[in-house]
Image (cartoon, rainbow, N blue to C red; front, top):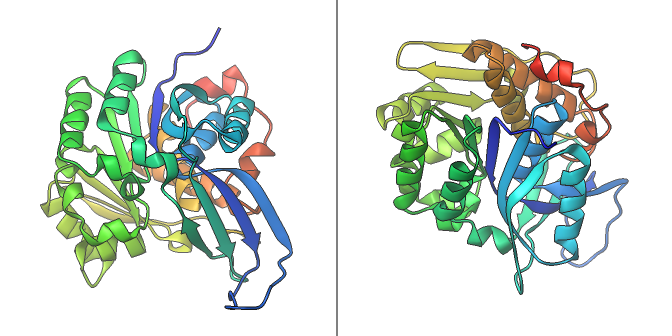
Length: 316
């Protein structure tokens, strides 16, 4: 019997092609790289895979094409136990593709196409929320690469979810669409947690520091802001408190692609198991530290042993 999910992850999914190391791309010459991975990717997929690997039932809301690329993604989701009943497969529409160029310092750059992610709407998410009353946590991943959600009606969808007692989280992805952050401002009052990384926080707000950026986001209606800062941990800010939660040291960092999504997976799983915000952030750091020891955003999860039912019910 399929377990009912407490976590619903909504957002962008892609096929990731990761190449490393790539420090420069010449205009005319060819180049060689040592490591390559082909895997399911995109912020929402990465979070959902992480949640499933950590032992929590999870459903994914997304759009793909009806093509061989989508078949590859569904194969991965089935392998780890992500529930896919809310994924729409669209004929005559390509599944999104992302090329990740990871440099010799383990930092990625991305070449991305919207593909079928263009088609994900508020109505898709609303239907999935209504169909899954067990989903107490609604996680939106990759907000700024989901063009159909950059609309006022998405705020109504999130507001309705919170009125139903759902806990809402939203993470953004760096994108040219972020040049106009105004669609986000309408969402902030309807989010229990807003997540972004340091670069995104500064770009969204135009603030000179992370502290100033979190102040701006709180002033615009956010209830809780978590800014992910890699090896420097994360900054947690609410109207009542601010604190920096350190990340554990990692001896050998291979690839930081997907670290922020792994943080989100660890965070929401810990919250679903009753952890405090600080405990959940530490669980997020632990998950991110695991992912960055392997090439690609989800390789570390795919190589993990499945969690038992006993692990699923244990508090972090």
